[in-house]
Image 1 (cartoon, rainbow over the protein chains, first blue to last red):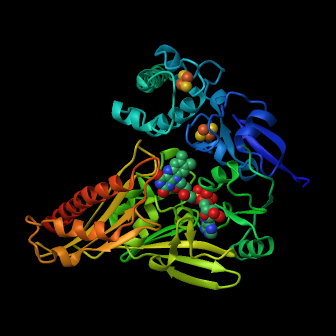
Image 2: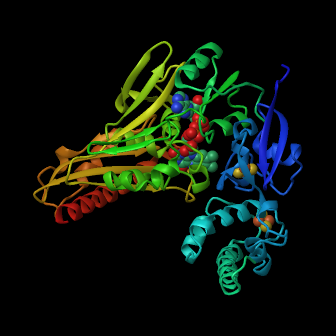
Length: 172
Length: 290
Ligand SMILES: Cc1cc2nc3c(=O)[nH]c(=O)nc-3n(C[C@H](O)[C@H](O)[C@H](O)COP(=O)(O)OP(=O)(O)OC[C@H]3O[C@@H](n4cnc5c(N)ncnc54)[C@H](O)[C@@H]3O)c2cc1C
Ligand code: FES
Ligand code: FES
């Protein structure tokens, strides 16, 4: 069977990318293989592990459970997009570093995107809420303690930054 | 593994979607949270997919006195967080919060879960407990409403035909004085439950007027058991659920698998049913007092 290619546009971390993909191309593979953004990881490829989680129009979704063609026109944020405006470590990334919240790092991209979206709706979470927020992401190394700490630390970094912004009257 | 090749269609209207289903023999792609994993594991290889995600008019939640009605593109999360739907029928949010993880709920649709008809899924059991229905448009059978009692035919089998599109689901609001609850036990939070129970208990003047439960993972479809006869008339602070538990255990046919033996599932059904009924009763009593 020859497969008809579909021309699609994904806005990947703010940059529109035109891709030509067969219908069965998973969004995770389109991001990794076609757009060459390999930060997004693929673990189980059936929705269970969370490593492939990206933000689709701002909401965390499993990129291994979507077809790229179905996401045509969407705004996608991957872990590469969770940085500061100038490309430095974003608050969640910084918090992971501060708290040693990764070991092998395989699961990390899915955590970074999930937590980034979570803190938008809940900028001051309790520890219980932090645990609940990462409940759909598996990590085989860390034992989760430091990841929970990183959620709280990221919230703290964000608060400090917005306080600074307020004092200086300009974006950080 | 990767899914097998298929032809992709993205119709612009319900009528076109139904025509395309009939013409191609393809399957509906809604949230894909059940269909894509099945395709990736090569347990299914549909020749064509009909992507309904851009169909207009299917993302609405309507709440009025008697019911909550959702369109086929309402995501689990959207219904879970809908305040008017929660106020009308808190059972919806209680059960939805147990469906997978928030990330899956952001994409998966509640109607898709009904059509998928997994006997371990929460929302089919909720629809059955509430005597709800599914609105369908089909090429062969036309437009119709299918009652929950006729909708769930077997494991992963609904009453839909291959050229049918489910367009709405309707969850009737229980009468005043009715309390509800959802309880389940899973190996890990977010997994499919080993057993789950939804309960409705209606109180009138401080006494039980009616009670029913709906169970998951203990049969080929959701199992609804009417237990009113075992407890009707009992004053709300002195209800004994023993007879209800016996009736429930007699009605289920649990099977054993890697997650739990049949015997353990029976035990869970007994214990969780009493808890769910008591919680629904307390919920109803709190409403009566308010
Ligand atoms: C890791 C993981 C954990 C999960 N845990 C749970 C859980 O605990 N409980 C639970 O209930 N579910 C769980 N799910 C499944 C989830 O709820 C799915 O969203 C739901 O079962 C299907 O909805 P969907 O919109 O994704 O449908 P799809 O996957 O797109 O479709 C499922 C099936 O229904 C058909 N279909 C869908 N919509 C329509 C329609 N409108 N008309 C006609 N046919 C249609 C499709 O053709 C397909 O056969 C889990 C999924 C994952 C990946
Ligand atoms: S790779 Fe997508 S959830 Fe595991
Ligand atoms: S750091 Fe290795 S899996 Fe999480």
